[in-house]
Length: 234
Image (cartoon, rainbow, N blue to C red; front, side, top):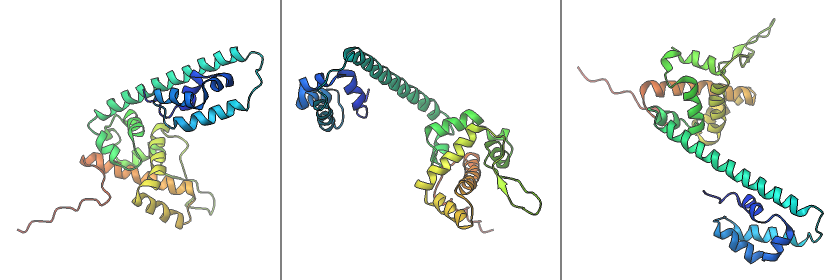
């Protein structure tokens, strides 16, 4: 179990009162933390003992509260360990799917979003027929909400699969930060006058087409699409 990022919780599990921290001192607390492989043990020990030195008044019921704090810290650490085990199980199951590599090659889609996509579609796009139907189900195909002389007023549909919507919309947000092509597409839509949400929605819709093509062809995403083969001379 990697406790490197859980220093404060581990510290609470071992020391619940200022007196306990003062008794061991900075060096003692640091050694205790290092023995449990806590990163930044020296900094955490100094901060904890420094705070303990400013609290010299013992409050009524302090020992009972300390026991409760220790139990809560232990419970949070145990829950975190269970979540890590579930994440590992989920990743293992996802990686065994034939389409896993293709799905995760699209920038912005990791194991969790990829697994959610498979859970919603089964990885079989034949059931949808066209990318337009998939986009409609995912809630990323804008629908017109025109009235009177106002036309071209597009909004997200009211009914859609929220899991699929989360896959495409969230991955679009992530891809804006990590994929130059997605960023360029988003910036172009903003330059056209679209609001942030509308631009992300347009990007999410485009990504439906891209993922559809990747799964259809069984190939991973590339920044520059492969060129079609040159026609052979007769």
